[in-house]
Structures are given as C-alpha cells and as structure tokens.
Amino acid sequence: MSTPGGPTEGTGLVVALPAEAHSIGVHGMHPGDCVRWRGGWIAVSGIGPHNAMRAAERLLACGVARLANWGVAGALDATLAAGDVLIVDRIRYARDDPGFATDADASEQLAAALSAALHVRRGTLWSATQPVATPSEKRALAERSGALAVDMEAAPVAAVALRAKLPFVVVKAICDPAARELPAGIVRALDGADEGWSLRMVAAIAFGGPATWRAVHALSRDYRRARRSLATAAALAA
Image 1 (tube, rainbow, N blue to C red):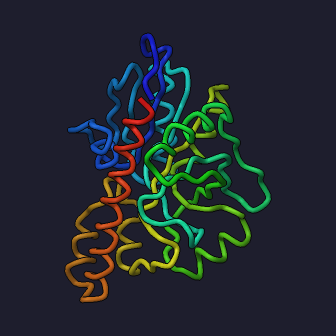
Image 2: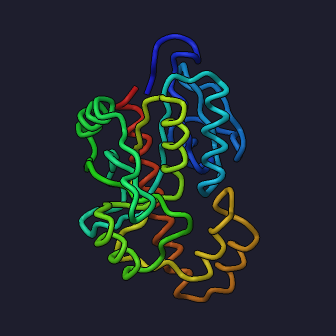
C-alpha cells in the first residue's frame, strides 16, 4: 500500500500482532509501537477492540490520510481455507447494526491486484469482542450475520476512520478454518493476550494434553500460511 508524499498523504496500517508486521517486512515492533512504513505509518495494536481503537487513534495523530486494518481472521464460511484472502466490503459487529462500509474503489483495486497470485474473496467481516472458538458457534454466527470471516479489530478501526472522515480498507488472511475447534484453554489465554503469547498461553499448551498440542500445531501451520499470504499481498499492493 505505498502512497506518494509524506505521512499526511500516507496510509495508517493497524495490525494486531508483531508477527503480522513481520509478514510485511517490519521487524522489532511491539504492541503500542507506531513507526513509519512505505510513506505512511504502521501501528501494532495488540489483540482486541480496545487496543485496535487506541492504535487507530495514534495513527490519526500521525496525520494519515486513510486507514487500513491488515492481518488474520478466522473463517465462518466453510469454503475459505487457510491462506485465502478476504477483501472486506462491510464490517459488522452487532445484530441490529448495519456496520461500516469500506472504501469501494480502494477495495476493488486491492482485489484486482491481489487476485494475480492469491485466492481472494470479497464480502462481510464480523468483528467480535472475544474469540469465536467452535464450529457450531461459527456456523450460527455465519447464518445470522452473513459474514464470511471473523476478527476482533476491524470494527473499532472503522469507527475511528468514520469519525475522522477517512477512507478505510480491510485485508484479512484466513488462519483458522470454520471446521476447527480451538481448545478452551487456548481461547482463555488468547482473550486479552496483547501479543498472542503469554504465560497463560504457554501453560495452556504445556498442560493441555495431546488434543491441545495437535490443535496448536495445526493452528501454527495455518497461521504461517496466512502470514505468507499477507507477505504476497503486501508485495502485490506496493
């Protein structure tokens, strides 16, 4: 997402985790950091809506002209596989609220560019306040919302963009297929873990037993696939 000029003309990119920043060539960042990137700025928020909103507000203070949320999401649609990319047309977060529309022209341009090398879908993203962990929860959410995938950061970034009257796009790579069930211990550890890993996470894995170990192995594999897709997407969108 390179743009001409200085930071007042650039894109402000919100990513949840340092690993997502790594996937687009930015290293050494931690949650709360905000640095220059490709003529704009990138902020690592940490997991969750409150962190994402604070990161978006930091980017506004840098004088960006547009906002973007870039990272990973869980599939709600069973046809989405790990490494597939969703260019989001609308972000929803509540049953009776239409949510936020993304910038149509920018999303169309991104979809065209990324389709050259990636499996790209367009559609709605549900932005949740806590992890959606089981296949039954994912199916129910998909049926009532019409969303293809779920994350925890896009809606608050969209709200900041709307308030500031800035255009906004969302690019998500799938890291968690709809049929996967996350072990309860991992879900509890993820909820509120800014960097995705914590002492609670390590303990949940260490004491979770073989089923947890297999689930973590599969999730790690698919997360690597998603990160590779993000790296490809960053190169194609440059």
